[in-house]
Image (cartoon, rainbow over all chains, first blue to last red; front, side, top):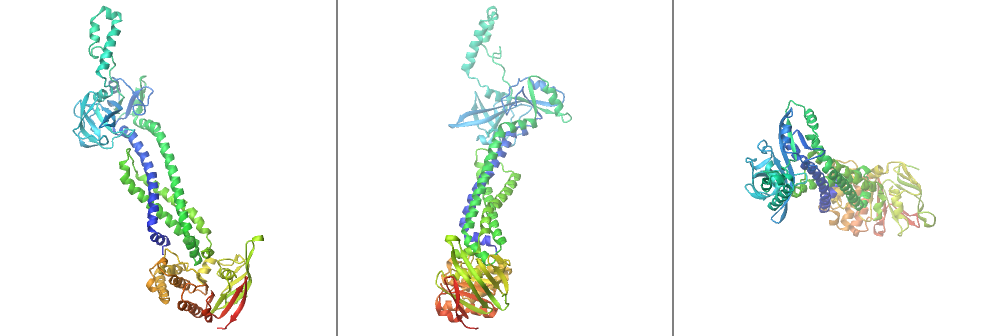
Length: 404
Length: 235
């Protein structure tokens, strides 16, 4: 006869409610682990998927994700001719926040080096990659945009031609992919008034120079478009990414480019580590401590529940001992109830988590290894939390039957 | 001492609770014998030490001093144990208390069955035996009921069935008929005598029910912790 099961069946409602409470606690523990995995996934997603071997960024920076990086457009041509480089691409990345339907609308803007890179590597769930040089975008479904929808960013309208799934920035914002030129236009969108003021100040500057006095035609040209006489520097790139020929060694290419004084070079793995050790590291520690705290709280709560359950059964345990039950029988009964409570709580945590986590604003990723680890932890918690109850049960004397 | 013909034997049992100013002497120098097949009644007012004696003999509450033999074996001398008490209680002693003391999350049948399974009975045989015992006590129709669904008398009959389950050589009953009507009370007392005769065991019953005293072979009375023989009728 299984005493633990008999007891549970007799008090099923209470046991289920207790397991539900434990389950909700474990769900939070499970969720914290999932949020951590989500952070890592979001932080390294673009680095992993874009298919680059080395990232060339502004000198002494850890860009373009961990910090801002600015490199000149012509860097892509310099990199492309380095021996061993298969091809080099421009890369632009920045985050923007606009307003849409009265709510903040954030997106990570990624510039793809069209026509070399049209986003064929993107995990599309609808539509197609970019095909035109301008005014097209591929948006992640998290942004809530529909295929064929047009949105205004800066001075221009962009049509959504493709929808991706799971392409998020390290901040959890949905990514949108444009050509590099469009991404720059969005980033460096300068209002007409600013352009007029810049032209006026340019003319003033030229008029104060000898050149302006001697060649008055320059004053007229200063009022023209910036393409005539550059007043504002050309838009810059966030980075240049390069693929290395299979036959070449990445480290030797990196060494060559590292010799240039105006750039820093990171391999894909280094770029990943920069992300993980930078912005993710603190969140990792924060989440880790929270998870440890929650695990400890779960253990204490479970221990108190099992201790209370044992206290309620003092008379029954004393009676069982009186009629010949060994301590082993009592111990096994408490342990079984602890394990059942833990297992049921874990199952509830998993089932509710499956429904709830997708609704979270940031990604919650439950990896099999993490789930197995949590199951082992729950097993440990169950064992640990039952010790208090077992300790109490072992001290119960059969003569306590007589006390009422 | 330690006579094989004697089922229960005590020598100089004394139980003192507390010490110094708070010292309470519950039992003093209690010596008696119960032979195999004998049914003994223990009378006495409340606080006279009857339950203390019963728990000492039942190996539940060790005496401060004195010896207890059961079936010829010295099992306890003062607080010192000479055997595995858990195992010994399981094999040799059946208990019936004033309150039925049933396990609330087990049905009537399971309350009997657990005593058997703890003693190594396989589930099928234990189920069969528990049904037989409940039938014997007129409780077979309530076998699946939980204790809260039974009346006080019905609960007590289940407790008696549990005490009889392992055919113990010693049955200790503390006012077992207090919650039963006179007819059922007498049936239980006669049942104890039948068990004592058929299994050659010994039964000690603490009782206030003077209507069934004719069932007993010996009647002891306790007063202020001391025991004395009131009536002896050889079986």
